[in-house]
Length: 114
Image 1 (cartoon, rainbow, N blue to C red):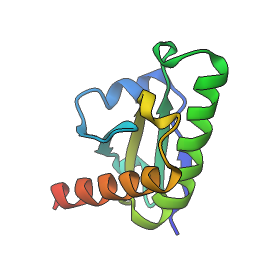
Image 2: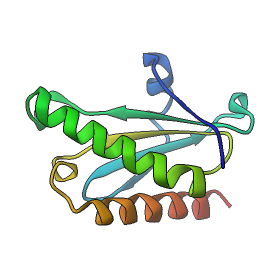
Image 3: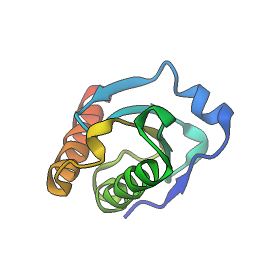
Image 4: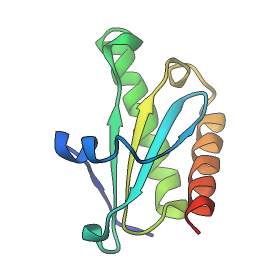
């Protein structure tokens, strides 16, 4: 299992602006290799106010974070930064489908880097 840390600084989020993108119904995934990470990976979440009030945004954030804790250690690339930009569908999408979308996105992004 890969160690996972959180992206918190605005500068780190901005570094992913021009990164590889992969969309799914619940989120948009941005990723880029970051040799400074070593063996670990970093994850950032973005949930805008356009998606709803605080309760809605917090639920989306919790669901994406829980899915990432299950899927990322198994399928994410080492030394990579990821940002998940939430979409409205993340609020009520079936959790199993959300997990499947995340796994598919990670595998697709790993395939693109090879």
